[in-house]
Length: 117
Image (cartoon, rainbow, N blue to C red; front, side, top):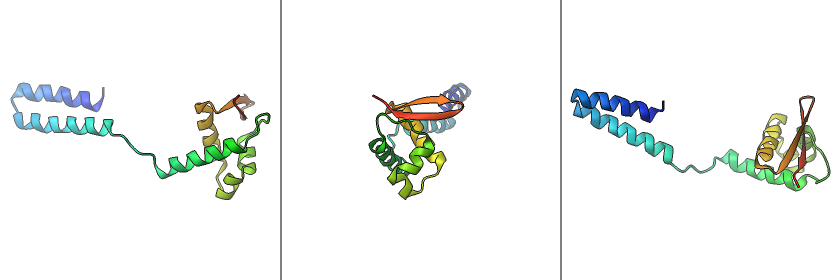
């Protein structure tokens, strides 16, 4: 059950009890919930930065070579200059895999990435 559904259920109970002041309050809360959920959010500074790093990774990778996250972290000049941690590089590679830009092969719990054709 969502917050909005909860407010609507409470509103019905309060309306049946005849408390118009509380009904108005609950209607205001429902409006706030709708406004909060439908808002268009701009990307954060980190998301914008990550987009740049993903583009750099794709430009650096060769089509016929298989890479691990550590290979990408140590080999891509933009990532070396930024000093990104292995975990963050792994997260960037996972994002690229979800987008379909790279393909992932898992061998013995280790991910290997290759540019998608």
